[in-house]
Image (cartoon, rainbow, N blue to C red; front, side, top):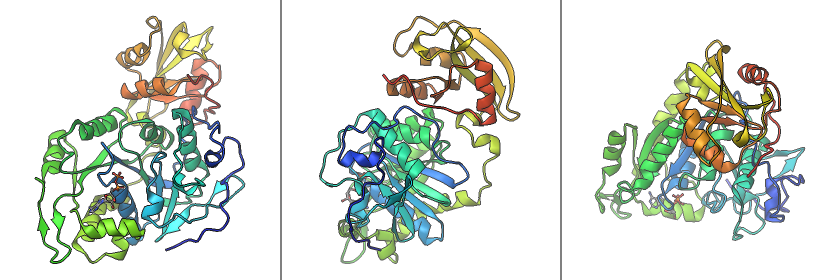
Length: 422
Ligand code: ADP
């Protein structure tokens, strides 16, 4: 279960490399390119673990869920994208782990059969504060998805930082389509707007909520094993019912969980006979059941938006070609296509309202658009489109809109650099 430190290797010598963040905080990253980074056939289920705020046990749930799935014989990866506070390396006793790379491929660490990657494995000084802008974070996440040798996985569990910021948004864009999200809360946190915000974030991004976990729900006495409800519990289940999402279960406060985290021992592996470990195992049951479900239809694997039967693809146009500055384009081509047959059914040219921040995402939403293909777009604008249920594809060339759409529908659209990152 342990890996010893050799020489800390920079995972890649590429100047865009995330690994250079430890010694080269000016690394550029490829922050703007939101093209899905993972080939769909490699990883069957990508699941993001989220929470409204920190300290509720999100990383604990992510790590133990990953190990519980591996104990059931599944091939599992665990990706920690909490760039500012990666806790997975400590939790899994990987502080001394060595990350090896060659030819742009990064070897993940391994714990109990789970392949693990975290920014914490790449920092020279684990106490270092990482100050990264949104695009750089996105570049780091892209690199984790593209360059880490995950191989064939049944599940990739992504531990996202608390809240609904750059990192979960980047994961949704770069690893699309995700199977869904697990949202972790505590009895105290459940009534706050934070959890509802996480659920609404998923809805806006068309990301299924696989369920809510109420962690730290009751206390298990370390002497007699009796469970006592020290705070009012059960709120997680009620909230899940109210919001129309599944409830996955309760995990009690168990001092052995905290101790296992401090010792870097995966709890469900080392304490698998305990009631708390069984509670973690129960969380994994619906996730295991996903593997029995049939594989997605090919046409559903391209985009989250592609699951709709009709796609409306918006392209900013000037002089008959894609306009690199979507905010200042003359017109938008709105091309409708059937998601099943992947055939274009209609095309309209629309004149957008005058440019003002936030206007275009809302206007295109009102026109029924569910995808926008652009040359470049800043993070804020991308977030606004996501909030309006519109998938963003950036880095397209200045070609005719019909040509771009037919390439997009055929899955052959080559997206280059996001050329407009402001
Ligand atoms: P988050 O990822 O939400 O910030 P962590 O998973 O890092 O939270 O957990 C915060 C702290 O709470 C850690 O010290 C962890 O060991 C402890 N913890 C989490 N869940 C439990 C639990 N069910 N029982 C006891 N301690 C827990």
